[in-house]
Image: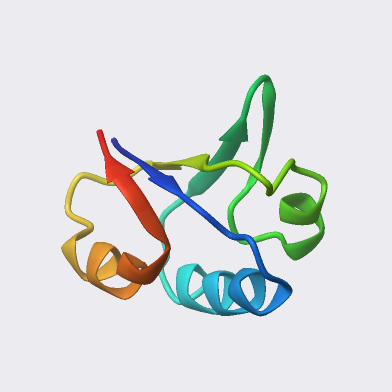
Length: 78
């Protein structure tokens, strides 16, 4: 499992992010405080507080291609 902090502050960013993560077959969640949603769900993402960075949890160890694709959204890697 890999965890990174991302920021999705604009509607266009949410759409781009969902299009990117939707291309990968493994599961991913977004966590903001105690709220957890599927990272591939646009409606789920909009239910989170997007004014602050949120945590992306990737349930796959080999995700280098995904990390390259989402680099514009990454704030910090854990």
